[in-house]
Image (cartoon, rainbow, N blue to C red; front, side):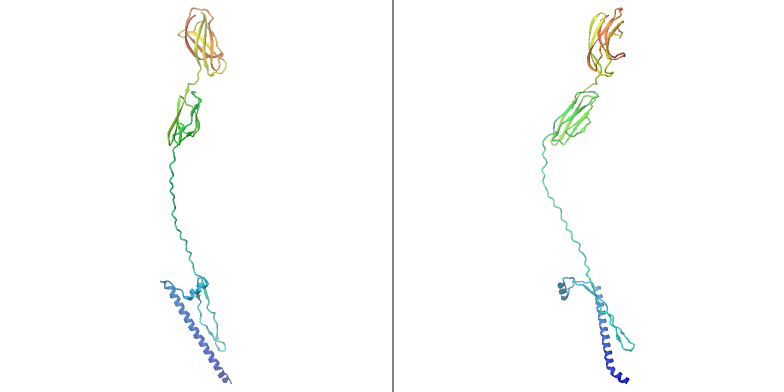
Amino acid sequence: MDSKIAQSLMPFVFAFVLALLIICFAGAIVGGLYAVSQLETASLAATPTTGPVTPSPAATIAAKATDTPPTAATATPVSPTPVLPTATGTPVIVATAAPTATSVPPTSTPVPPTATAVPPTSTATNTPPPTCAGPPVIESFTASPNPITAGGSTTLSWGAVTNADSASIDQGIGGVATPGSRTVSPATTTTYTLTATGCGGTATSQVTVTVNPAATNDISNFSATSVSATQLNVTVKYHYTGDHGASNIYMAAYAENSSGTGVPGTGFTPGGPLIVGDGTVTVQIKRVTPGAAFTSTQVRVCMYVGGGSSFYCEVFPYTKNW
């Protein structure tokens, strides 16, 4: 019975083994072809390309159809299909995963833009030289007040200066803007020169500041009248600066000989009081105590503070017999 069953199964077993052998042979062929393709790929990658690569017609048609750069496919190796025995001795074929293709996007290298240097353009223009309007013109140059007293000050003033690039004044003043002014205090009479310079040449203007001596006390214009043998009237002009006060200032007079000795027994009636500034005053000299004859040859006239001593005197020649 068992031998009959075995005989009946033999054709099926033979067919199964034959199919198994065919499958194994096909797997071996596929594995060999894959190995050969891998070796060719490696050889092509190692060998530099010396000339242009011409794509196949099919690849060109595909690229034009999709308008997309072709991608390289990386094949996954296929392992031979293993055959495992079963408990009953019947071989079982284990299926393996089919190879998958991985798309590798092409690497693109950005190309920097090329800068083109544009040479600068220059436009030459012929500018005519400026014309000169003429020589400098100084409108005015004055000093006020003028004259001044020593120790005082005056103001220099100048008007507009045209057709000039610069203006300056000497005597240590230097460059000035126009119009303008400057206060100065010269110690003595001084001439100031304003100089203007321009394309048309140089122009100058001058002003002289007169400096008078400082005012002082003064007695002048002496005149005398002999009234009698015992009296002499003296009249003078004066200038009083006020340096000893504005009041209680008087004028005195003395008849003397050439040695400066006064007439014995004489006195005076003062003139005044004096005012600050200019004035005229008369002083009376009188012999109040009779005595021996005396001849005077000069008259001394003095300013003095009432109740005090004299501070300014002038001597005038005049002869009189007393």
